[in-house]
Image (cartoon, rainbow, N blue to C red; front, side, top):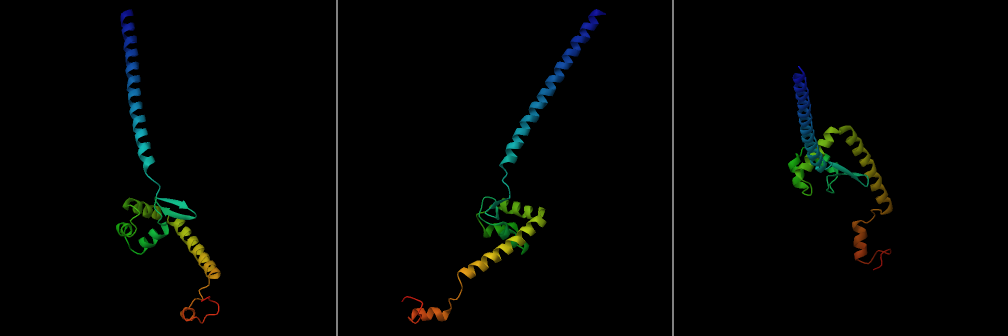
Amino acid sequence: MKGLAIFSTRLQLKNDFSDSLFFLFHWSIFMLLYRIMASIVGTIPKPVRMVEGTLRVGDSRVSLDTVVYHFNNGLDAAEIQRDYDSMSLAQVHAAIAYYLHNKAQVDAYLAEQEIRQEQIRKRIERDFPLKLTREMLLARKNGEDPNWPG
């Protein structure tokens, strides 16, 4: 009976050891896959980034406003990419997906951008009035403009 107890104890230890090896093997595989996935996911760039108050697509200077405008006017991603070759097709698709996924926030952003653009336009018109007409240019050309050194 004593021999059977020693045998069963050794068998139990062997099973515990093999269970531990099984666990360690699978844990190391899991950690390896986790590191691989983390490195892959870490390489996928964000679809848009904020630069000086404007959302830009990928690493390009093209604004999200531009992509959304063309998308809403019926252009598909390939046509947008063809017009703006500084973006890859993947970046255009990512920008469109970002827009569709965050439509309410992007529409609010676009409304803010329109207000901002209107304010900038008014400030430029105030600071640099568009009083230069054809008649003024002709007067300057002919030396008849008293405000123009000629």
